[in-house]
Image (cartoon, rainbow, N blue to C red):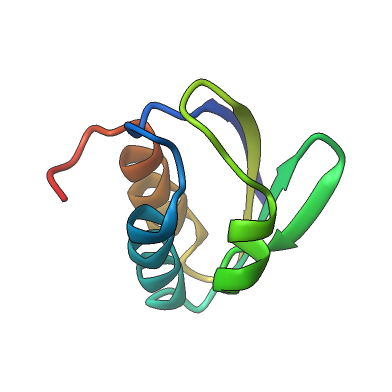
Length: 87
């Protein structure tokens, strides 16, 4: 299991467009993906759960990835959340 604390760098955070992209990326992996913010956790492949966390730019989240492709999944999602890839 990989656990990483991240400060969200996406402009406007995980609003509808970015959440859709995040969930699409997360769903492409077999690993279990969990996102936590302020003590609340949700499945990273659940769009309504992610929207419910109300993640804004500058917020700290914890990304937890567990499974056979966890390293690749963690790297892909981290790069997206830190706004290091073109969307």
